[in-house]
Image (cartoon, rainbow, N blue to C red; front, side):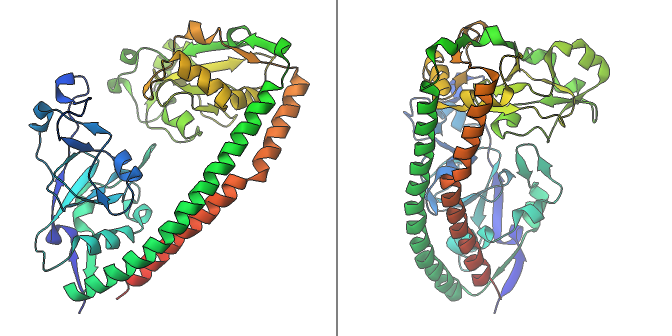
Length: 395
């Protein structure tokens, strides 16, 4: 006999925390403690149902700020990227975007059954209008109200066992497919790098000679207290990272916009992420709203000597990314070098006609879509998982 209860009736819900980034005593960069601190990135990269480690640790001092999550607890992301799930295999802590779901009565629902049930939910529909630039957000009130349907424990174990076996087979297929995607992506990168190296050495010019570069304003210039509900848009890291200029979180009024006109974004500009995730770019389309960049972006305005689309191809290539990486000291999470250094980076800039030919060639390469075809195949595997989950949870 199946039952349906609200999530809060089945589990105790607790939310994690992020210690102050500005206080190094809260963090354990050397991982000398056992204070695992899980973020959504860890849930995304975890393989299978379980998690027992993280990219970042907090210090003993930081661990005192909030309670740990016990071993054998289901955890789930409910902000930005909803529905990332894992079962803890050791005591750990999480950030504030992750909820720990501690089952109240073990003879009512099992962790693994709840894992699979929550995996079958359409989170986009459930989140409704709670959509942010970086993703969806599910507030705690909605989280508590999620209806959970479940059969008796023995039936749950049968469902879980079947799903475990079926998903193990699918995961093996996904693993093989992932290698195919990587090989296709590598082939495209090598082909592009070879094409760039074939451009005449006489065509190399410094970026600063053919483009105007403007780094975003100091952070203090754009405090949240000055933001308005509608007005001129604030372009952020999310825009080049996601290669889009459509969704915005913050706006300023006309007076503030005029005051910061130097940082205005115009069609054809290239926006580049400058801290954390380096070197991601987007070309501002003609349909983009008027606005300015924030402190985490670099605005590059090409002259008549270089096409925006061509420059973006060069900047997204391994050729350019390696230059940025080397100048930045090889750190995975760091800042783009000073504008004066970037201006001196030399890149191949052939004639406009040759740039157009290069762009067309790149489009043809992309149209081969080997990686995309493999990705579509991978998506089919995940869709198959979803269909199996939905079928298993019917009652």
